[in-house]
Image 1 (tube, rainbow, N blue to C red):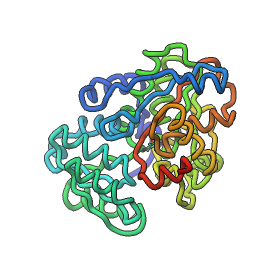
Image 2: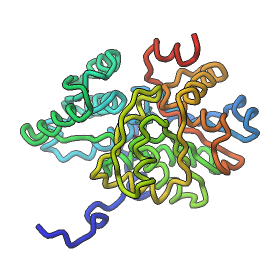
Image 3: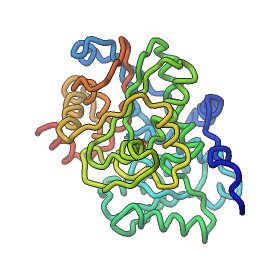
Length: 331
Ligand SMILES: *Cc1c(COP(=O)(O)O)cnc(C)c1O
């Protein structure tokens, strides 16, 4: 096979119409979450700060949007055989829930390093949890086998047209509720969340600023942006465990979206992540996982360049173990 066309033509990026279509497909499965004012954060920062509470999704994280859209778009033969994914938790929960709601069998593959409560959550949602190996790579090998030998369809966590379009529905809701937003702060790992938000938000409002926040410990997207191509980084334990993992050396969608549309990327150390979690608990009564709190952390520490008057913060998930949460908030 000759590769005469560019990779870009082979893998066109989703656009605003794809995000709008996704919103219709996921309606009734994923929640249209509230965008609530935060008086304490507004007071602290001197800006009008609004929190997009993806913590309220049925599985406790935004990933349901992308998974529900991808499952809805499956060809009939895949829908009959089932879906699979390799996940450190939130994506697995999302695929399990989205599949069950749409009558599709699901096998979620994960490594032994994933905490027990996350494994149980996936089983409770009606999927088979298949645990193998000590790394995401081992889990991914089983996914590849299920796809090749048993004909299941993989729903990847971020680098997928329908997943990115699904996550972008967050931006449609935020700008419908608060057209005045000057910037949106978004937790960043593989870039499905920020990629979808950035493409939809900038299509609706080109001057809006989109800021990504990752942890210092294993920020694969930031390292890839610096290198000008997807690169691997060492994976290290972090409070923001839902932000761990690489972006994929064969990345098709999220690397170009983040490179072209994201205005600033901020990296946080562990105490900064903990501070955001503590603040959300103390001031807002919200239990938020490390990866979900980083937007608030970045804002509190004054790290966002030119946030403007009106700032939207995506609070992306609430799935944290009790011990880890209590340690983080200092009990
Ligand atoms: C997956 C996840 C993210 C990061 O999303 P990407 O699309 O990988 O960038 C942020 N917060 C939570 C809670 C997540 O589960």
